[in-house]
Figure (cartoon, rainbow, N blue to C red):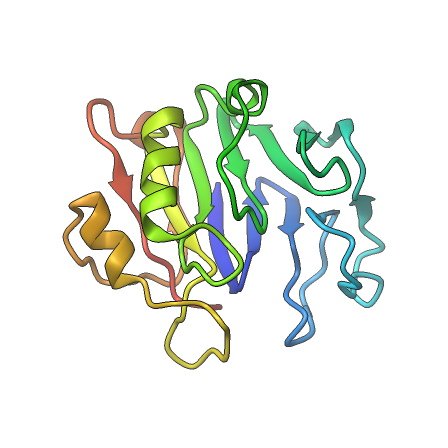
Length: 199
């Protein structure tokens, strides 16, 4: 599996021959074809212009396309806002969308055991670094990919990444363009923070 960050909350997953886009950014068009588009919040995001006639997931439920299972899970306090659990290639991934508060116990259990967690960390409308760190300690993913922070070259309302890295006790690692992962390469005994450049 190959993971790319599109900026803001946008993530692209290449799962064998299937492309999944979660929360396509509103600031620039997506030119690469997708098979599945998952949207955590109906906020006018433009997805119809994404090539490939993708299957849209913007409601709670369980969906499957080409061996990729997507679980859209409504928030207890705001059922119209979703977070996602994705199962593919014997791995599970969680995407928290524009989350700005702690999760309820039932919501936490839906993310239990995820291998990769996409977590907003920039405050100002999404989780603060301390809130993100607390949530990560509850979910205990193997890999954390921060999203929704002020990245070089992006205009956004969010704060910088460094306070989150400090709260996590993570060393500032160099950002990479794409992250390739499979079940065998998941860290066994530690949590790894992976920082992606916007692609």
